[in-house]
Image (tube, rainbow, N blue to C red; front, side, top):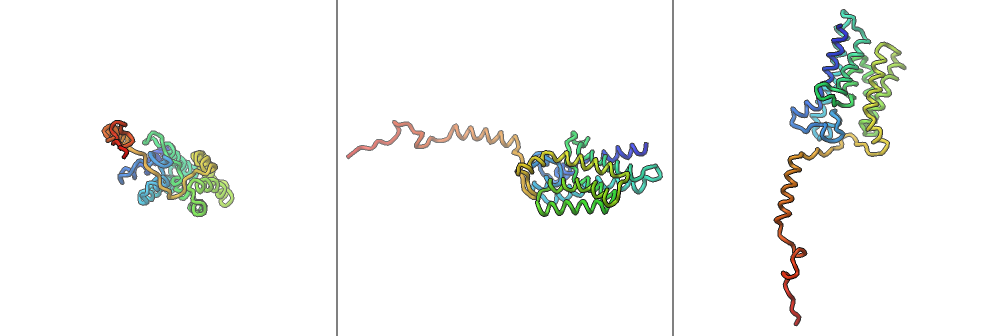
Length: 241
């Protein structure tokens, strides 16, 4: 029962979409309305507001870190060990992907996955972050860095720390992360993927567009005729000498 409650709490915490929350608080456009449409720190950065992107990154990582850390610290008396803690982290990650509070329209989960890994095994989390940073600096594609880090996470866990009860959760989290990046994989192959820091134009509000259309029609209707639009009879006559 305690494990089930912990899993549910992890999912609900993960369902807090901080990209949307931070953007609303700071008066920015909904990150689902521009760029990739992904409610995550990378897409918030495309709005040009670095502070909002940093806050989104921090809170998305914390919502993966905190539930796992709490279970690891206080869960032992209730029969919750490393395996349950990893599953709680997976639940938080799934909450980010399909948040119940935001119509199940979530992000790709990179920052949340990083928080989960840092809580499960700080050295593993730092190693995976190092892989992400190296790929991002060299290639400047957030998606490529995330995909590489997703592949590295379970491999590093197995090669350095061995197979443990947390490995299935880490592996499943990596597979889901790769699956969520399927559109980015297609863009990378086509050479159309956006690079880190590249700004995206926000969607034009429907009301503004409609108003512009009405003004445009009115202006066209009452615009004075040009010389090319003047009838032949109105043209000045030229008399030959």
